[in-house]
Image 1: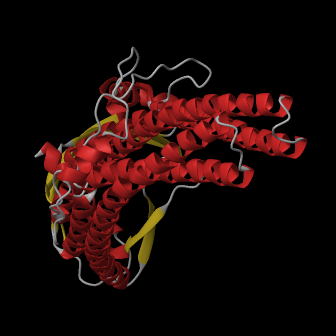
Image 2: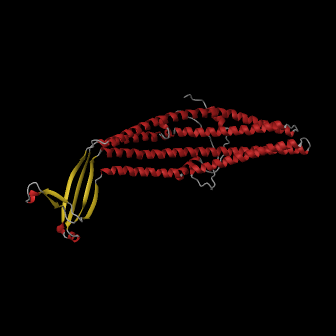
Image 3: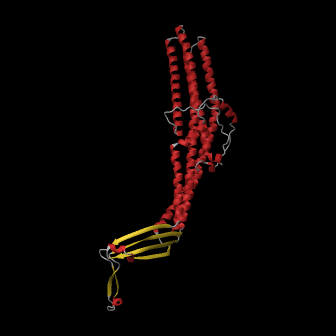
Length: 439
C-alpha cells in the first residue's frame, strides 16, 4: 500500500480547529464512564461467568456421581416365572409357575457411577475451554466497539460545537452588514427590494445557525447514549486541545479487533467435530451399589429387620459403539459447519483488509481536500470583508452580496463535513487495528 506524506497537511489541518481550553469531560473520562455503565457491555460480561460455569459442568463429568435411591412397590398380582417341573418332583418335560417376590417389596441404597474413559467427554471439556475464552474475546470486541463509538461521538461533539461558534460569528457579522444596509435604505441609497433581499440572506444565516445548533445537540445526545449517560442530565465536554494525526497506515489481519473472536469460532467448530467423532470410541465407567431389599406380605412386615437383606456390588461397564447412522450424519454435518466457519474467517479477513485500505485512501483524500477547502473558506471570508467595505462606501451589488454569502455558507459546510469525515476515518482506522495497541 502506497503511503502518502500527510504531515504537512496535518499542520494545515490543525489550523482549522481553535485550540481552546475549558472545564468538562475529556475523552478518557468518557471512555471509562461508558465501560462502567453501558448496559450492553455489562450484560455481555455475564456471558463470561456463564461460560465459566459451563466449563465447570464439563469438568465435573469425571467426578464420581453419588446418588441415594429408594423404592416401594405393592404387587396386587405377583409376577411368576416358569421352571422345569422335575425340580419340584414333577414329571420330566413339565413346567411349574413360581411367584417371584412378595406382595410388598422395597429397596434403598447408595449408587456410585464414575466415568473412567470417555473421549467424547474429554473433547467436550476442550470445547468448553474454547467457549470460555471466546466469551472473553467477545467481551473485548464489544469493549473496543464501544470505545470506537464513544470516541467518534466525542469528536463529533467537538466539531459540531466549533460549527455552532462559527455559525454564531457568521450571523453576527451579517447582522452588521444588514444594519449597514438599513442605514443605506434610510438614506435613500437602496430601495426596499434590496433591503428585502438582505433580510432573506439574514434569514438563511439564522436557519444555518439553527441547523448547526440542532446537529450539535444530536451529536451530544449520541455521545450520552453510547456512554449510557442520563439523557436528561447536562454533560459538559472539554474543549478540544489537539487533533489526533494519522501516523501509521500498516495493516495486519491479526490486529483486527474481532480477529481472535473469529478465529476461536473456527476452533470451536473444529473441536465440536472431534467431539462427535469421539462418540465412536469405547466408554468405560466404574459403577457400585450398596443397599437393602425388603420383602413382606403386609406393609407392617417392613418394620422387622429380618425382612431386609443387604446387597452390594462393584463393577466396570464397557460400552463399544458399533453402528449409529444418526451419529455418523451428525459428525458429517459438524465437519461441514467447521469448514464453513473457516471459509467465513477467510472472507472476514479479505473484507476487512479491503475496508481498511479504502478508509486509508479516503482519509488521505480528505486531508488533501481540507487544504483546498481551507483556502476556499478564507477567500469567501475575504470576499465578505471586501463586500462590507463596498457597502460602507455606498456601493451596493445585491446579486454579488447574495452569491458571496451563499459561497461562504456552502464552503464552510463542506469544510465541516471534511473535518467530520477525517475524524470518523481516523477513529475507524485505529479501531480496525486496535489489537496492535494492546500487544
